[in-house]
Length: 246
Image 1 (cartoon, rainbow, N blue to C red):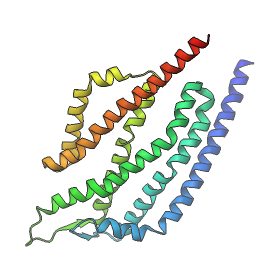
Image 2: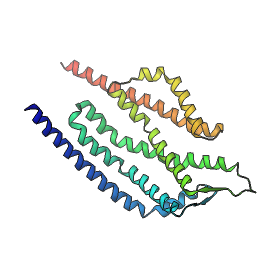
Image 3: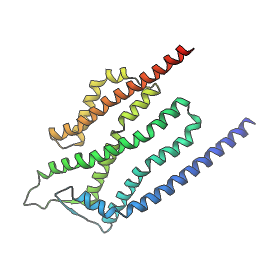
Image 4: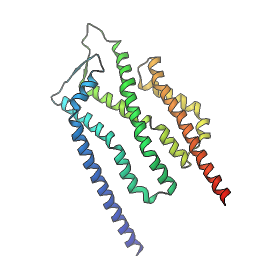
């Protein structure tokens, strides 16, 4: 009987997951179709960020670039919906505390990801491209293939979007008890060093650019500590109130 019940539950979960994936796919297709209408304007803006000439070296490079722009943009736009669908699917298996923190983090996740993407577009990418342009030689044609240029920009936007979600991720881990502010403070110097190395790796060999990237990462880590501390203080305060009421 138990095996039969397990099979029924597994079948129900499989059907629910399938329906969720179908809804996500449909929403994604609609988003990509809508965003496709503005790929020309988006591409024109991205090309305006560099002083180098953008060239194509294959018949399908322009099409590929537009598809990449529409695809990545649709993924970013659909993230909140995907998050909600996945939450609805896994929520029955979560504890009340875990469900609460996931619901709380939905909007902040999207906001921080968006801020990271905007930071990449308005600060990181223009600064890096300007720095690289200083090494251009007037006697040599300075050209960038469209595919590599768009891939660089999309990678930077997604990477900074993910990195800017660090306070939310660390706050969740702190809330559910996997880490605490004491550990985060204890290893602060190690994290700083790691972030400086990351900043050096992903930027040109220029101190200003490295600082431009590393400082926001360090600020995000400190923000993670503050948010984690506030969450821990809130939980402790709530538990004290419950104990007093008893």
